[in-house]
Length: 283
View 1 (cartoon, rainbow, N blue to C red):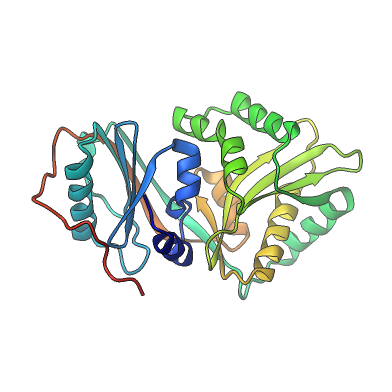
View 2: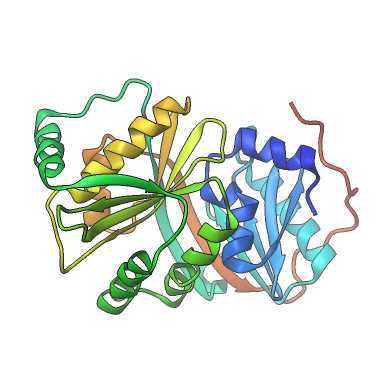
């Protein structure tokens, strides 16, 4: 269990969605643990290590030491690693993925005229509402996306638990775009828990009530609210594919961390002697 001081420290230093224990717990029911500057989660026989320190630079040596500690303590069947560098040989990974995290520096953001025109046109047809409670119409859009896209089992698992996350975490908000007939055209989920960051968590668009620029007008509103809240950055998440990457780069999103994922069977590897049960002193 995390202490209140640890939770506050995480909130002040988080820059990735995986740094948010409440979000990860709501999605996976995995217990968060903070050791030194690194978070890891344990649940259902799996260790999930987030190889991005809350403070300081990510170092391969440090990440592997935290991994040794977590395996020694819990003896998992599987280990899921996310880190900005390769940690395991590719042939040992059951699942392997590479990507980049994107973010927008909103302190001096200037979007081009073409994008401003897109937002202006969409604003003639759409109204944006901020909501804290997920509705049936939101769940329907999620179901439509799952049914119409070729997504992997892990992504499906997360999408099917978005409602649980939204009901469990009060710092998340739904930004909904509705047309003049009150049809839900699109919605985003934004997370405002971190001190300096807003996390752009999920985006869903209706196929039946499509309006060009719906995602742009929603993100523009999220940026406006984020500035009001004193945020410095918006983490846009991973690139995913060319279309998603194009959208993020259009909004001046730039890669700020490499992402490598490896899921492997633990097999009792990476054993070490002992680690103390205390974290390093916080700033």
